[in-house]
Length: 478
View 1 (spheres, rainbow, N blue to C red):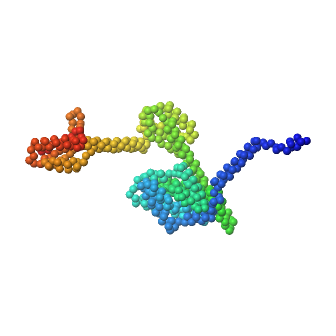
View 2: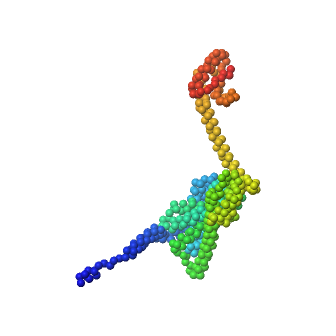
View 3: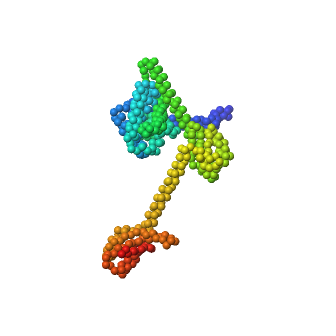
């Protein structure tokens, strides 16, 4: 009886696996709670103040108009002289960001009035910016293409990514209680809305429509993705929709806002995918040309990548590459996923095909220009080194002395001299050429030859010791 009581009072055994799963579940819940608390921005979002601040920044008149004009002038000057610091300064004072954020927010909250106001102000800002830049570059005496200008003539996948993440940082900073000004300034610099508009003005001023079109394309990319990210974050943070008394009007407004959002999103997504594919194509093509297209005794002098035509052109010079090798390269090209539909075109500088002779004038000119520029740089570097060495050699040969000091000492110590001159005399015995530092002395009248010779010999010994020269000549001219 006693044994039964003891057995029944024992604690039931627990399953070890169940304990293990319980501990893992507890850790996962803790990590999830930590990450949620770390990344959650809803509790610190001030919706009313954000709406008020964004609507206030949309307005474009008075001070904002003049600030925009002056900042456009500053940016245009910076682009004109290729000064990054000046361009950054202009972006910091530009009010261009306000209407773009207003577009995204108004679509998210179905606010048609704010949407109209944002579009009108954005259109006026863009027109005024392009006009100001156009006037500046029209009257500017400097019309050369600078790296800062060229960089704003066509968007890349990096520009799209900067616009996306910059726009996210901007709207998140604006929704926080106590707006983070440094973030807003940083986004203004990173997304670079103003330089493309200045480049549009530059393109119009010099009549280059490709530059103008590419620059407005870049501006549109930045503006669209900033507005799009504003729309997405505003929806995620549950910004209150604008309420209308008329339910039919509210429904129609919601439909219009949704349509605008879709119209904006679809081209943006297509553009993003196209730019991403182009970037993959160019990166893969460059890697393929570097790692695969190689042949002993042959050098690549130029490459050309055409994403639209799916063509990779390479210009070779040196030992002719056999047709079998080229065919192998083309077969290997098909194994690269991003290049399997591309065509490899190989031009050789010599060989039976005579490809180099068949190249277009533009391509040949480009190749020759590259070679000329490289050779010119090499020649200029050599010339500067030769000039430096000649100057150093001259200093060494003449002892690096001051002729003025020597002449003053001669005047004090030798009263019979009326004129002293110096030159490096080049002489040869027809087996070698030598440069001899030579002092020429003109004596006063009525000085006999014996005194002249004695003093000339004395002067030569003194100057040799004074200037620390191994070879030196002193000559009497009378």
